[in-house]
Image 1 (cartoon, rainbow, N blue to C red):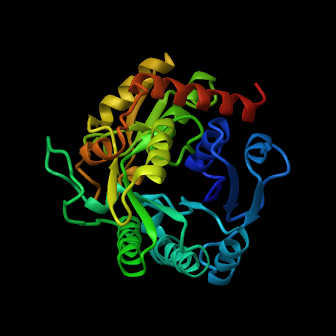
Image 2 (image 1 turned 120 degrees about the horizontal axis):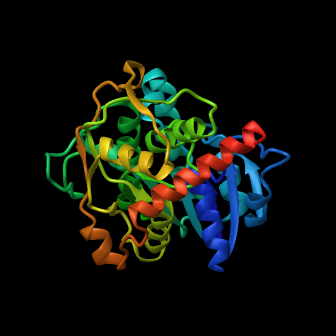
Length: 323
């Protein structure tokens, strides 16, 4: 069984490659935009049967990769994944996320028509849900920023290629998730990074934040990977599945929990530069469709996720500072 993971050097890609190898689920072939660094990538290299530098905006390169590898499964994680960055670079975000997915689907149609393709999308396509509600898959797509728009386009392309060309495309609409290895540009990982620096006396005792009133749910990346593996085997072609916990929290509550875990004393400071235009007020999903189809449910408690996230941030900060 050959699995191609695009975006393999990213946050989820690393966890996914590790899970496939750990569970003995076949060979993993990875692709990402750049070359792997000469040092610090031993674990990722050990997980991969092969690796190639691949820019998904290059149609010819994507076609060549799919033709040469002839994968049985493709997990498409390559993306510009930041909503904040998409506000600064809307065109680039659309090309990478939407056109990149189109290149992959077209390459699979021509050279790997029997492959299962997991198109990893985002719950941001829903916009904002009603307070106290869980968003189901039949909710309208109402993207509120360029990132969400690009992911909505990717989602619809997946449905078209499944329905029109008979490809086995399974789509996810994945809600917020975090865990060890996530970069600080994302909200909770950014909080953990700031707290780790404060704890090592590398920064003043202030945590700079954006809007803390929004309600989000946060799954653990390791649970998310289990859901993706289940959908590769059991997901229905052409269908979209929320990958979510169904439990919402205010960002203020999540920050308070991280502060408690860190053990540091810090003042929370509102930073206008961290407030995102047209931010989402309430984004909590309904996991029933995924659970019914695959039997999946989240297994890792939020407290463990936050603890592992903070410990990972602290270790990285200490390494960088030579402590």
